[in-house]
Amino acid sequence: MNNRSAESKNLTLISQHKLNGFGNGGEGIGLQTTSDGRRIMYIAHEQAPKDFTSVDVTDPKNPKMVVQIDLPHSDVRSNSLTVYEDLLLVAYQTSRPGLKPAGFGTYDISDPENPRQISHFDTSGPYSRGAHCLWFVDGKYAHVTTGAGDFQPGNQKDDQ
Image 1 (cartoon, rainbow, N blue to C red):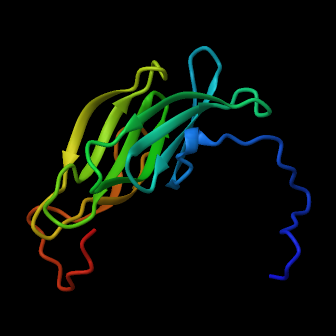
Image 2 (tube, rainbow, N blue to C red):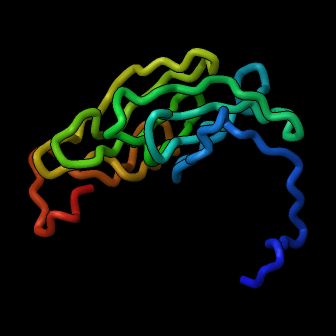
């Protein structure tokens, strides 16, 4: 790239949101259409202290923060997330094997202002750092790249 600023064709930035200074979005972005017609975007954060943020993007020129959730400690991150209707799944990855929470959390987001964790699938263990990526498109099966508490990889770096 040269010294000129980056240039895009047929693409115009119409707005942005600073996410209260926690713009370290990860691989996970999901969009929910609520029962009242709003469009809520969910963003996973690559590092603590934030877990995920939701932003109302119904008016793309005027995005509004809905809620921002904190992680339980600094050795975990929300690497990825996925949305299906009123369910949000968040992948949790720890800085080293054996820590918790590792795996993924399932949230009821029928009330976007008050997301509520309804379950956690634990994949922590002596060789697992948790879940890396999620895919949840049918509301029934979560496809997850993860280690497991009883799995010992042939290569220690293959822990998720």
